[in-house]
Image (cartoon, rainbow, N blue to C red; front, side, top):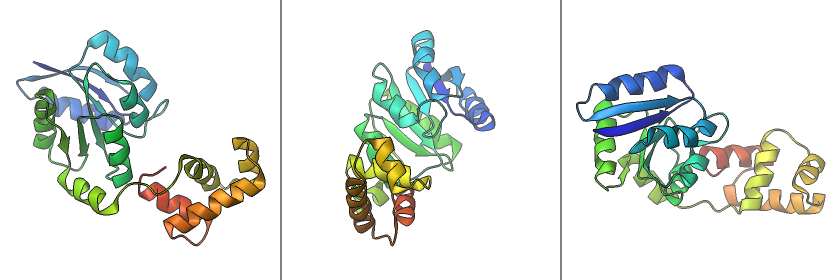
Length: 197
């Protein structure tokens, strides 16, 4: 029996995934959690073979959780089919990345395949990731864009990140240029849509 833990903040989605996987003869859903910060304790308690993680969850993101899990295989199951998210997930060591609009049979197949040691990636997303490439933004440019996306002023961003206002302007200018945007809000939107933030 393949033991599976499901982490998704949407009750209906989590319950639906559990119900579908429970129909499989060789898969047992051993736990469900609604927050990223509950995954580690659930893994210690239930010892799953595979953890299915959503990306955007309260507490801790699925990508941050994936970086910390080492004793089980991780499959990202998300609505966000963004090349940048895929790149970050692969860097975190995930065994699979499946988008939620895939047929249910593909998820069960992915669970089986990662358990046998394969890596499973949504094919359309893999092609998009190859054509898009990696993020051109530095870590600091991402930090500045995240702050800018909430409407923070340059002074607010500088205070929050312990930078000078001139340095913030330089990072914003560089990020705007790299994303091909017209302003910082558009640059943040482009970076988020690519999964770079």
